[in-house]
Amino acid sequence: MTTFSAAAAIAGKDLLSEARSRERLPAMLLFAALVLLVMHFAIGLDSADRRDLAPGVLQAAFLFAGTLGLYRSFAPETEAMAIHGLMLGPVDRSAIYFGKLASGTLLLLAVQIPVVLLYELFFRANLLGGQSVGGLLLFGAILLCFSLGFMALGTTVAAICAATPVREVLLPLLLFPLSAPLLIAGVSGVRAAMAGEPVWEAARFLVLAAVAFVSVSWMCFEFALEE
Amino acid sequence: MTTPLFEAERVTRRYREVPVVDEVSLTVPAGEIVGLLGPNGAGKTTLIRMAATLARPSSGALRYRGVELKQAVPAARGWIGFASHQSLLYPELTVAENLRFHRRLHGARTDIGELLERHGLAAVAGVPARHLSRGTAQRATLARALLHEPDLLLLDEPFAGLDGAARERLAGMVRAARGRGAAVLFATHDVGRAVELADRALVLQRGRVVLDDPAADPETVRRTYDTAAAGLPAGDAS
Image 1 (tube, helix red, strand yellow):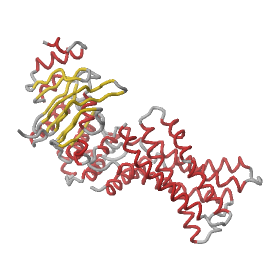
Image 2 (cartoon, rainbow over the protein chains, first blue to last red):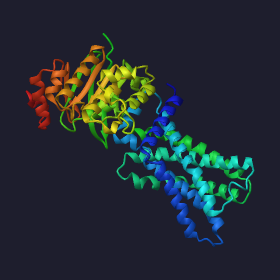
Image 3 (spheres, helix red, strand yellow):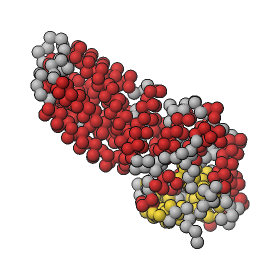
Image 4 (spheres, each protein chain N blue to C red):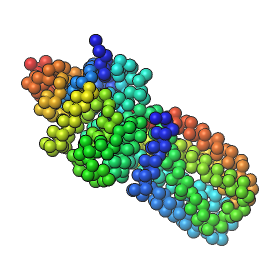
């Protein structure tokens, strides 16, 4: 079996598990929506800074929702030590990393789409209306690369934390500082989209960051898994 | 001389500089059941985990069919079947889904329906693993470990928590694996079960082999085990 088909099998297994348990997606969605709602009122409806602060709120909602999803991403593997069954597959252990990365990214993307619509509603962001088709595609690429980069880091960090008794504390402590470049580029992309400006610069940076994060995390993953 | 299926040569595993497995050497030829005995902390689980490629030795060599482990993985993992007292099953997936997933992972062509029948699991094929009783979960675990017909079966405390009938069924499966030429290495606390099932018995104490009895003589094994469990030097067994 190739690494690609093993990764596809692992991602499929994760998504089937999630469809049965509904442990991650509803919680991620609800939490992201709550972040938007709380910040909607906290910033103030008449605040002059509202449009400046809004892009950060959206990215923070993604960051928190993604972290919530990562808390449970290794739970099915560790509950009955099913991770040992995976590790005993006669395939490169990269397959475990890419399978987990694919399922995590798909879940975060599934959260991002309704959350962007809610964001439009709460912050009157005009993210989608003010863009050409090309601009919308680039905005989609920003969401995808943010998800990919964040989950690339998160998958390895979650694997490290899964074996520790303080994983709930350790995961954000390790992950948030590492995610800073993604957050900054994401905010800049959303701000440009809201102003009707080209989002090309932010998209390009996020593509590079996603590629770099996937490469580095992939190299570290096997050590995280074994030890 | 035939190449042993599995071979450990002076294997050591240290945790924070403390050796948990200390210069252990053993060979397991095809068609042999080897029982690994020892009190808690003797190093049985660590040795089995290293043999299963789930942990790396700090020093020493592990060989599968004469090939060094480093060169043999990931292919060697296809020769290994591993089961422990934990089910290694996904709790939200049904028994059949768990088995289908592992069949795909191993690239095996096993007929899942036939496998379920053989292990007495047909009635629970559609039941999520979370809802299985201990004995049924263990049968499903064995079915998962055996679905790709491994040459080396590694079992860590496989009898823990099973009732008499389930233990007999498990012993039957282990003998059947030997019958088709597989080698079996199992770790247990249960001396009676070990000497009954094993062709050969090893007793570990504080990470070292204190007895390697090719005849698995019940009296010798029990005496050595009791001495090891009492924490006495190995020489006091005689």
